[in-house]
Image (cartoon, rainbow, N blue to C red; front, side):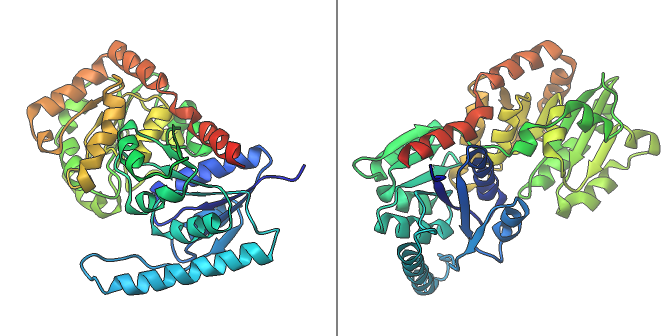
Amino acid sequence: MAAVKVAIAAGGTAGHVNPALALAQELKDRGCAVEFYGEQRRLEGRLVPEAGFPFFPVHVTGFDRSRPWTLVTALMHLHHEEKRLVKRFREDPAARPDVAIGFGAYLELPLVRAAAKIGVPVALHEQNSVPGLANKESARLASLIAISHPAVKQVFEAKKGKGTRIVMTGNPVRRSVLEGSRSQGRASRGIPADATVLLVFGGSLGAKHLNEAVASLKGALLGIPGVYVVHATGADDYGDTVARLALTPEEQKRWIVSPYISDMGDALAAADLVLSRSGASSVAEISALAVPSVLVPFPFATEDHQTTNAHLLVDAGAARLVRDDELDDPSFGSGIVELLKDSDERERMRSAAEGLGQAGAAARLADALLALA
């Protein structure tokens, strides 16, 4: 029996590309043939080939609402690429997919529209708690809309086609994260096996205020015996955070600062508590590894979607929510200290996170997608 051919459009940001790669690996393990569509000059143009998947370049441009005239160029590129893909699929049977899926962002539109035009079933995946414009626009063409947060179901109910199924799958997480090693994450950083580890990361947006607030807690955190801090500042704020912390050589053994974390799976597995923003990928990864967390939504996210993202864990009892304007309040620091000292409460939070079943998101999405093919 011929392998099921799956076309995936994902790109622009890691938040779109990484879940798509997680799905692709799951599909590959099931014997499917996967091909990606995206912009060669953007993140997907590097990450997809590095992961070993075929990549077909499409060229589209976004629409800048502050410059209305860019809509004309965007529509021209979209129409051209849609026609090019239709022609490719009709003239080359080997290139025609059995099913196509878009992961949001405008670059999914040529694939989604071309697939729908030639009768190939279309699926969409929405990572966030507030759906993006591309997925809302594509919803009427989709046979399946997979969501990661229950808050978006109502939006898609109003946008979807007559026969569209909406399925709660969760947000797929990269296997490298799921297979994170607690012992490796600690050994590589010189952290003892019996230490209590706080992992801090802010992401590329809005890390500055979080970094400042955490740095102000240096005395309180290092004053707890056996506590170690692994702190990723983001590249832009690394120098300022190092200067603000002013760690002595002895303190540097317990407060490990870096611009970013390349081994996120190991780092999360090594952690007893996470303090972070609540982007969709961060929430998915924290949930998948069932790490207790304190989430501080980025206050300027579109439609405050990071707060809605956070509630997936908070409402389950797996996380605590702190507003950005509460970071300078004494209760923020006392709450972190309390959790680091209370292993029983952290264990309750961990069990609650495990109950969400986020680690199985890629498998659930693959099941739903292959049912279309």
